[in-house]
Length: 436
Image 1: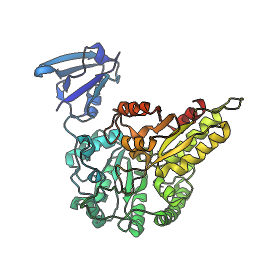
Image 2 (image 1 turned 90 degrees about the vertical axis):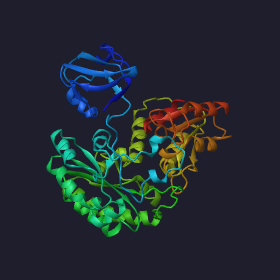
Image 3 (image 1 turned 180 degrees about the vertical axis):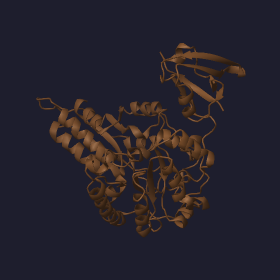
Image 4 (image 1 turned 90 degrees about the horizontal axis):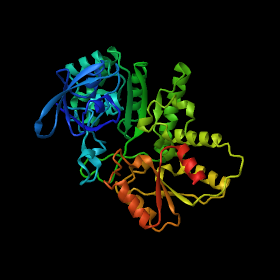
């Protein structure tokens, strides 16, 4: 078990102790570290002894003095040092199984690790938890956790996950709740399989477990054009999305009447597919599942409106350089009114560049899954000289999903006379379109 140190923060206790990037953490105070959770407990005191390995397997120990609970300043290549626990299920809707071949290896990792759920909000199925895992979760109070439920009906869930142990969900949830763990849940909804009466039962079962079960998100199944021999699944369309909204809205009204919270939230895609208005901000109760995309469209609009209200300029805004705002096909109805409004306010000639996802194919229309090559293809020969990208198309290393680097993307755009900027929020988009 080794933690590879990829960065040492300047001015940190680790930097002052002479620890360098490229070294590997072996132990703290003589105890091997499994992950950064272990490290946070072991290094909480004012003094710590770190065992490190460098080049050619040479080892050394370093004494660190710091303030109690002060961060060591070490950044690791992975949050887990003993290997990510991967998923052994064979989910019928698994997005990883629908990826095209030839991408970087990390995209094919199907993590199902409760530690990553606690640290980053990754959804897990609970099918690989053993007694030792439950003891650690309870002892270290690793809460909240994020659980992929999909269905509380044992037979339906086991079939969806392709794993007999998947039917024991309610027992696994019970153990977590008994340990005082808060659980956020999600359902990947597949028409004809876990919608209808199955979804209603899932809602009622989870709602009965509140407040331990904090909320329930329902998102539509995503199908790419690379399913190969995977079993056939149906996508939602305008009519089926509208029908689901109508049914879930009844449950939401019940929840708000009884508890003051919505509890069950629908993915933005349902409203956009059905061409129905997005819920108001207060319906999202502070966006507890924003990382899952729940309410991201409404939050984007709210951020734009807040930036607009904060714009105290008394002068009339002048036109700024014509800009192409990149988005996926699904986001057009969210962004189009905003761009139209700013054009009317400033006399600018900004426009949306809605990009078709040829890389993934199928019914993939969300902005976050756009690739560098598809955007470049759509941006060829456009009249604008400025291109705005949603920041979520890039990972922390500046890579698109098709492995194109942001640097290479900008270089290609520069050859066409295009400058490129990323958009981090609705407020940021407002600033970019008004300030130039």
